[in-house]
Length: 200
Image (cartoon, rainbow, N blue to C red; front, side, top):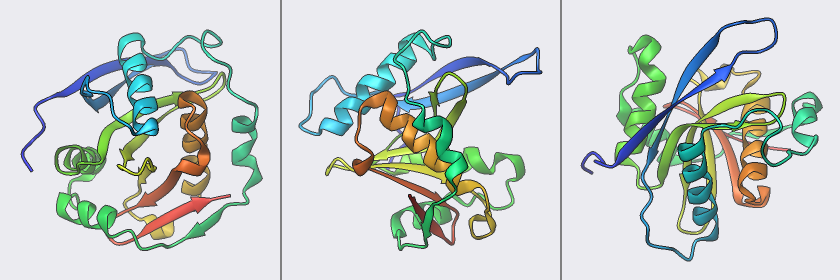
């Protein structure tokens, strides 16, 4: 597949956690959505969300829709089901990206490869937040069936001990920001050898 010519970027400047007095910039990359409407409800919800954050950026605290307190406690539950499911598409794309040996550029290498070569990937470094937490999702995919996949690239996925809580919170925040049911979102962390599905 040829490189997609319609990638756009936006830099979000985000206040750092309490105790820091500096700010840092994160760049979000996304595929520009077609103006043609689809019958895929979740795709349309994602498209609306992406357009909003690209036009307006992430809001100041408390200026947008309220996010439920569930997102603030989910990472403390630690009752996640982590299963090593077969997801050949994700693993194969990671392998083909040839990220190994790229050092600090491993994430970018994987993300760029997915965006350019995977028809289901719609963007990377996608911001999600609530009043107390701000993070970025490594990759977001959406299938014609309406299934949305939230992906977290971890170069040594089989050794991870905190990835499940992190990716699940991202998934919950995305659901609450977009209105997409959690039943229609799958959370994965992966590398070029393994892919782990995370559920409560």
